[in-house]
Structure formats: C-alpha cells, structure tokens
Image (cartoon, rainbow, N blue to C red; front, side):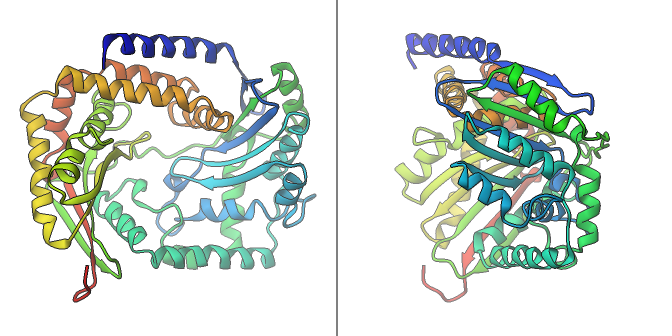
Amino acid sequence: MPLINLFLILLLADTATQSLESRITQFRLRNGLEVIVYVDSSAPVVSTNVFYRVGSYDEQPGSTGLSHMLEHMTFKHTDVYKPGDFDRIVDEAGGQNNGFTSTYYTGYYEDLAKDRWELALRLEAARMARCVFPDSEFATEHGVVSEERRLHDNNPNSVLWEQFEATALLVNPQRNSTIGWPEDVRNFTVTKVRDWYQRYYNPANAVLVVAGDVRPEDVKAKVQKHFGRLKGRPVTRNDFYHAEPKQTGERRITIRKRVTVPTLIIGYHAPGMNDSLYYASEVAASILASGRSSRLYKALVLDSGLATSVWAYTTTERDPGLFQLVVTPKSETLLPRLEHIIYSEIARIQQEPVSERELQRVQNQVLANRIFERDDISGMAYLLATSQIITGSWRGFLEFAQEIQKVTREQVQEFCRQYLTPERRTVGILLPLEGEKQ
C-alpha cells in the first residue's frame, strides 16, 4: 500500500479514536452494575445492551447448554410480563430485540427510537431480577431447544465443527458447543435453570451499554431508577486459561455424511490474549488466507483450482484457542495435494519472514475494518460490552487495532515456528457417504 494511503489510514484511526473516547461515559452503580454510555446523534435511535458474564465457558460436564437454555427462558415470564410480552412490546414500539449465548457471555439487546428507549431498561431490569420459571413453560421451551439440538445433529458441517473442537481441545470449556451436548440437553430440568439464573443474573455480574442519541446524565438517572434497587452479588468465575495440556501429536478425525463436497479443517493450538504472540497469530491468519490476495487463496483457488474457498482465523477471545484453516476442496481425491500445499506455505513463512509490504497490507486491512465497525450503533454497543467483559475495559477493542500495528515480521515468523507445527495440529475432514458421487 502506498505510504500516502497508510498515512491517511493512520490519521483516520487516530482521529476516530479521539472522537470515540470523547463520546463515552462510564460509571458503576452501588450494586456493581457497570454502565457504558456511547453518544452518537447521527440517527434518532438507541441500542440498549445487557451482557452477563456467563456462557458455555462456565458449564461443566452435565450442565453444558444451560446458559443457552436460560437465555430462551428469560423471554418467557417475569412477575409482570407474560410469555410473548417482551417481543410484543418491543415490536409495538417499532423496535428490534434479541438475545444470544456465546462462550464467555450471554447478551440481550433492544434497538428503539430515542423517545422510547427507556422501555428497554424496564424490560431488562425485569429480566435481570424478576424472571419466573413455571414447569409448564419450561417443558415447552425445553422442546424448542431439544429441536434445535436435533437440527444441529442433522447438519453435517455443524457435526464436523463440534467434533473437531472437541478433538482439538481436551480440557478447556471452549471444546463444548454453546447449545450443549445431547445428553445434557435431554436432562435439563427447571430446577437447574432456576439455579443458573440465581447464580449468574444480577447487577454485579452484568455490563449495560446504552449507545445512540442520548445524554449521559439522562441515562444515569434512568439506569439508577430501573436498576438501582436491585441487589448485586459478586460472582466468582473459574479460570481455565492454563488448563489445556500441551498437544504432543497430530489428531485426525474423518466424518462421512450426506454432502456433495468435502470440507477440510486444519487447526493448531494458538496463544491466548496474555501471550506476546497473540496479535502475531491474527496477522498470520490474514496473510495465509484472508481475501483474494492471501497466499493460500492464490495457491489453492486461483493458481491450482484445487479448492473453491479457503479462509483462516483464530478462535481466541481470551484463553488460548485454535488457529484454523478451512478449505472447500473440489473433490475428495484432492485432499492430499491440498494438505501438502498448505503445509508448504506454512513452512515457507517459518523459513522466510513475510515481506514488509505483505505485513503492511494486512495491518492496514485490520485497522480499516476496525474503524468501519464503529459506524453501526448496535455494533459499537457489542464491541464495548464484549471488550469490557473479555479484557476488563471497553478500550480493549481499540488496543487490539493498536497492537496489530506493532506486530513485526519476526513475530509472525516466530508464531508460525512455535505454534504451526505437526505435533500441535488437528485435522478434521467431512466427506460424502461411501459410494455417493461428488
């Protein structure tokens, strides 16, 4: 990338960061609720988000999927609202709402017009402290989640990913799917859900982000009004950062399902966010297989025509995770050649540092993507909430882009040498059923 373009991107990044910080106000209620306000008056809308520090990371064998099951149940019934009220009320106000469960957090949001956003606070305060779980409603929603699990089992790619992660990771809870393992889902009880709710849903275990056309002092008064009387209870979270044993040999699984084309996943153990090579792993993923100008896209798709797609990314949010390469080969017979090319490209980076031009292209791409992510109010609220939970500060996502710019060619090479080795590798292959044409 020409130096003038680099200068403009860096200038834009610095200006955007200064502007963003001036728009943010942060405070904490006496009950422990962390509140972040992001002011953006470009449109008369407000996104209200409540994130809890609970997800599949907190679930042990026998309880996997409970966070997801609870997420479903919190839309059902409080002491004031009846089943369907949450969605109906937001819909009648012309807004949007939803919830989701992830590894480290469970999140809920409402996007409403600026003159109606307080409605979201009322709903979320009720969700936080006043949910009830009648047996009859649990049975109905348990059936819904069980059906989701069945659909998951009937999706070949979902099966591949689930089995791949469980093979690559032996101890860290990231190995468990968010929806939960089938036996655990079958054995959900309303008592387990109630206990999970009582343990994790309270102000001291939550982050509230209000983003949009608001005034910080008005937000503070309304948050205090709706959440101030709720009792906070600090929650101790188990830490599995160093739990995963070192892998000492390649692991390989092959799954056959009714598919028309194969899928190849190659994964390596990757450093967590506290490791000095964490940011180098992100850069290496982009160099190898992010976009048409990446090395493996050229080698596997453009030059050889062996595959129709290839991409790479890391699953690391906090704990050490996986560096993954995903390829769609044109046929099963091409798999050995594909693997050979991939391992050759990795060996090339291990032996020869990437060029400054290649490194700069990737760094600028990451930085530009981070800047453009801030244009959407809902996206900004998500970034602020997740950064607060994962890194302990909403500034975490800003620091990510800054640290990416500091990565050197030598660090990328060192990451590939240290982590992308055969003994750290797990390979997952999805193939058509025996005898079926591709």
